[in-house]
Length: 335
Ligand code: PMV
Image (cartoon, rainbow, N blue to C red; front, side, top):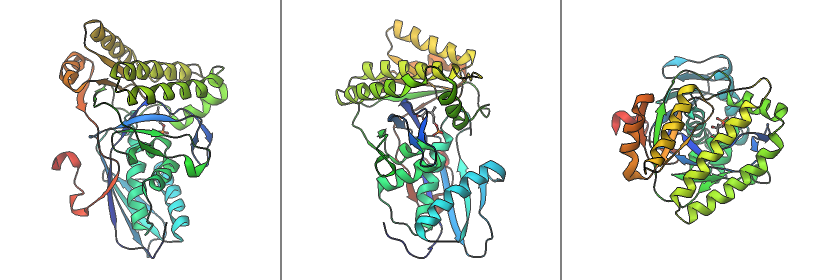
């Protein structure tokens, strides 16, 4: 890592990731270290594109998201993250952060993952930090844990690690798969994942079983990826997702992210399997459902699930990267 005086504005693009083995709970809130490792697919849709410009004349950071100036918590999280970048770079200058997010924010489509991955890459460059991929993954982790994985192309494992230096994501070889995103409700979720993780850890009687069970799922998942065994990957994915939602529901007061329509999608996916189409469902901290299938089955799965919400077939996408600021228009408009 080397530092120098703040250079010119930097623009980065990152995509969300959907975990097949989930991260739910921190063992260190300040360093954002997870209680267990996790594994995810970085998508090729719903990009966040972020520009960071350091300006000597500013007296505070400014942050706009999709053209709307942010304040309160939304600005606070960005400022806190930039404070970390500034401390690494030895800078006291504030910045203007301009972000375009193509996914419905806060609806469980992991927009915080693409958001902090894009911010990590653009802010590091704007403040003159020269970081490698594991260092960028560790930095993104400090904004939002799951963002650590959006630094990596396709399937990645985020190691729980034994401290800040070893808790980052890296690539995993796996069979090609498609993901069918079923957006059943694009509104902001009622309880943030941060609040819900904390409450689950403090109040669920089942929480002590969660970290060891996740480590077991992760070990089995890494084996299944290595063996290119899609059926096993799928079974672990769905079982693990339902375990996480059961755990979250067992908090006091309970938190339930899945809606009746989400449950109907899980049932429809089970019915597809009965009919011989291999598909498996998962869901993050929201009602939307992500279904994995072999690429050749994706259209059939998408058609079968279209009655439950808006459906989008996506595949493996690239880890967060710097882009030319002239390309800062939405990825899907230029694709
Ligand atoms: O990183 P956060 O605070 O957005 O939490 C992510 C939690 C889940 O999406 C539910 C699981 C995961 O591993 O992405």
